[in-house]
Length: 177
Image (cartoon, rainbow, N blue to C red; front, top):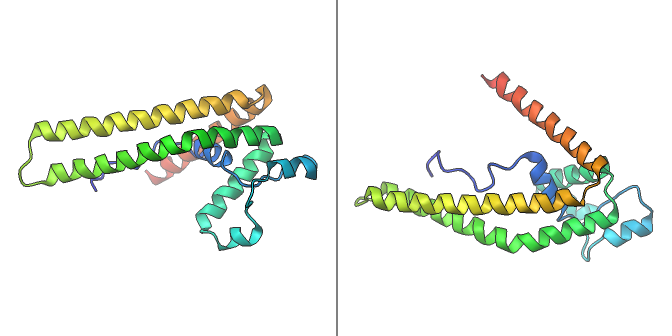
């Protein structure tokens, strides 16, 4: 693929990805009682053995999402609501991402085809742009729904976490220069 064509989720911040992952956690350990925690467990909750056999990046993401739950002190009810928000957006997101990947492949093929025209390339590029806009809008509306679930204290903590993450990314980028 061309280097200018990015992954459909390349624009997401680490915290955005964690919030999306958080909404999809099968089991979350919070400071609440065992009874409250059992309310958060989904059927087929992830066991320690399943996590060990999972891909290392999946284990890392789940560990980070659990850490986020603790840092934000999310209630079991909030976690259930987050999971529902995620469930509602998942099918639409999958369709958009699949269409975007297909459109990106078609754009690349059009660029390198023997008989191509600028009009055809522009049309395919517009389609890619429209699908990227749809993906961005869906991500933004999903994050807004999640944001509305947070208390003012949780929102403040999330803002601080995002700012620290941004500062770390900028410091790493400066080191690479």
